[in-house]
Image (cartoon, rainbow, N blue to C red):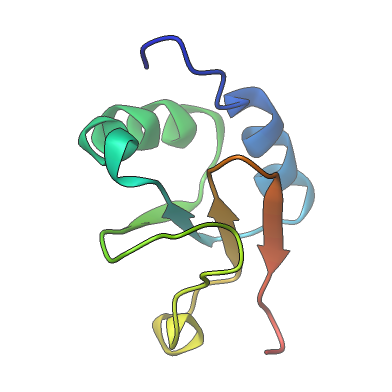
Length: 90
């Protein structure tokens, strides 16, 4: 993925340690074209299903509304600030 460090191993470790089965990835527009490759790499290290949020993303404070209805347990938002949110129990 270009020159970006998306901390893929850190994501894999987090997903596996929390036993998450459905994870939402929220990427800025410039990285959305690389989302498929990212998901394939993450799937190799976990047994989770990954969803990609293709709506707007203005930063970590711009969490998608209604993700709990999709059964998402963890949201990982990529941007300038680190943001990982367990949404189980929202």
